Every structure is written in C-alpha cells, then in structure tokens.
Length: 376
Image: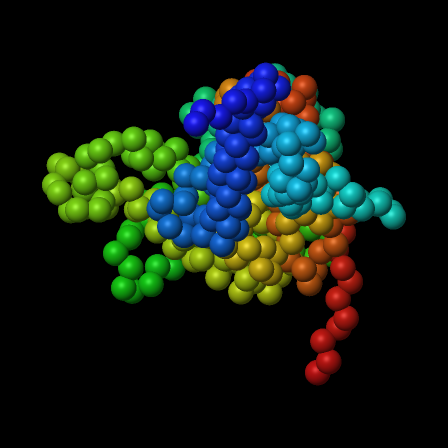
C-alpha cells in the first residue's frame, strides 16, 4: 500500500533536512569551541599539539557562534542560547578589560613605556614617544639600523638623558644607572636544552625613593617553531625518530620545552629580587594558559589591573586576514611586583599612533608603595 503525502508535507521535507543539518553543525562547532577553551586554558604550550592553537586569532569565535545560533530563533532556541552563552563565556577574560579601568587618584610618579623595536615605523615612533614623557623606556629586538638613533637625548628614546644597552635589550632613563647585568636563566643540571640566545638584561636605576631593578625581556619568537608543523619530515623526526638530517634539538616540541625553561628560569631570578622590580618585555606568550598564570603568579600584569579594552599588542601591520586587519593577541607586558608598586594606568598605543609598526607600545603609570621600616 502506498503512502500518500500532501503538498504541504512534501514542502516541509527540505526544511526538516535543513534543521537537522543546522543542529548537527551547531553542536559540532559548539563542542569544538569548548574543546579549544579547555586546551588553551589548561594545556596551551604545555603540549606540542595544543601549542599552535594559542597563537591563532580567536576574537571571531564569539561572533561566529552568534551567527550560527541565529537560526535557532526559529529552529531551536535552547541550542541558540547555548551557542550565544558559550561565545560570551569564551571571551569572558577579554571582556573583563572593558570595566576594569581604574581611576587615577593622583599624579603618576613613574611613567614607564615599553616596545619591541623590531619592524617599527620610525617616524611615527619618534612622534609618539616624544608625547609620552616617559621616565623609563624599555626596548627589545634592537637591530643594526637602530644604532644611529640610539643616542642619549635622541627622539627614538624620548629625549631621556641616560641610556644603557646589552645586546638587543636597552633601557633609557630619566635617572642615572647604578649597574647592569646580563641575565641568563639557570638551567636544571638534567636539562638537555641549552639556551642559545640572551633572553633578558637587568638594569638598576637610581630612581627617586631608592634604587629600582628593571628587567627588559625578550623570549624567542615561536615563528620558526610553528612553521615546522607543516613539515612531514619534522613529524617523522619528532614522533618516530626517523632521521631528518637535522640536529636532534630541532624537533617540533623543542621550542615549547625551551620556552618553559626560559620563563621558569627568568621568573625564579626576578622573584628573588629584594629591590622594587619592574619587568618590561615581549614574552611571546599569550595572556592565558598555565604559562601565563605562572608569569603572573607574583607579578602584576598592568593591563589586567588597570587596562581598558582588549589590549592587543601584536601583530600590527602584519595582521592576519581573519583578524580583519587588527592585532589579535597580547604578548607584550609591563609587570610589577605586588609589594612595592601600585599600577595606576595602562594604555596601549593605538593603531593610528603605531601606523606600520609590528608591535604596539605600552604606556604604564606606577606609584611606589611606601614601605614600613624593618624592625631591628
């Protein structure tokens, strides 16, 4: 016996099919975003398979879930609500900056500026830094072409009267220096990794109220490490030990192991300081995950305390197409120890001010917390 269907029932079959496919796609996308959140929050660079996910543009996750959820207004409002709330939750840490702005109750006693100088727009940089009147100006990734511009009182260093440089790290200051040190992280005796670059320098500044330790940090970029993920030869070498005619240290996971050792080694040195401490640096570390939490365990992140907005500092003119021409991560930080400093303000250089610069500069106001005299 044949089943006779009405014209209305025949017309509804394509619609029911669309609804089923939408629900399947929405659930799959939602589960993928949940997995991404779990990986970036609890794993991140700790595992080589999850590490690349932390350096991808993620600002569009919320809008994508919103767009996917819109058909749910007619086809399933519970699933629509789930998509929207997940998108908001995924960006909760980003949204926090919009209402975390802290009012400045008095003048800023110490104005600190930091920027990675690699691929900066020199003219715009000179114009911008000249307006900031910094007391301390930290620079990393200095290259040969920066040599002529790095002189005392030059526009490139905001006209500051004192300047010290160690390798690619430099600090210009309104106050005289008491000393400088090369900083190499102490590696565990059992470590098979050897750090082949200088990640930081320490400067001691004779500031008002007493000496201050300033660290200028630049952790090696993961750019080369990320490029290895597209090489079948590197996967064979990393997972199977198949000879790839490269050094045994050049594997897909080598950079992430090195990054962990460098960050831990630097932080042990910094956290052992007895002087008031300020850390200026490009850590090449996004602001989430276990390694960021380790970074801010005893140090205040200026943007997290007083910053407004997303605070993204990288990349500038080299933005990925999916980020719509905007920076998509925070890897540059001004940090200060909690005991000696109150962070009063944190501003990120705007796109117009940075122009064709790769990194956005940070401008932070600090106030020293009076310390009670030690009882004898």
